[in-house]
Length: 180
Image (cartoon, rainbow, N blue to C red; front, top):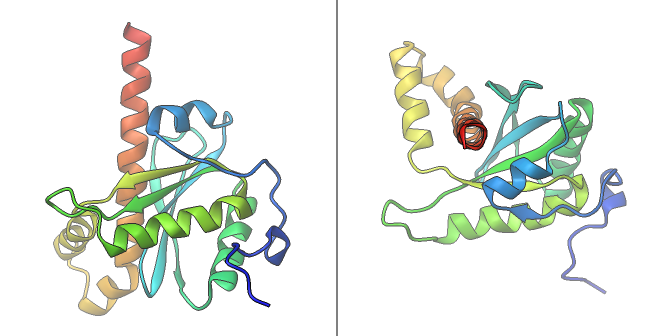
């Protein structure tokens, strides 16, 4: 008998916290534990590009690129990394079209977020990732990276830009709240 439910948490690692929610940026920032890192994710059909923040949530750095196989294996690796780095939240890229439309890739990213949330037990922020892959490619070309090297790191670089955008927005909102 098959089920439409996401894989059970024990299929990977049991969550340490209640089931995660997909939040807006302000609620996400408020839900984060102090000193917890964030993982940024560029969800692709063939890979998951990952980036990691520092504990002060100021700087994003490339972490890893997971070659996608089956959701269960991909999720297990992501949960393992989240536990290893004491991650308090996930920032998942949302590929919105330049016209603001939400196509199949955006639906796939939202589906990934809904499935991974119960396994990690941390809050999730969906972040507009328009042009991050284009920007990552441009930065790698400026750095004179070979085509082969660009192909190896493009998804991790895109995840870094996604996460850095969210970190900058949260820091800006915090600065504005302090001034008011």
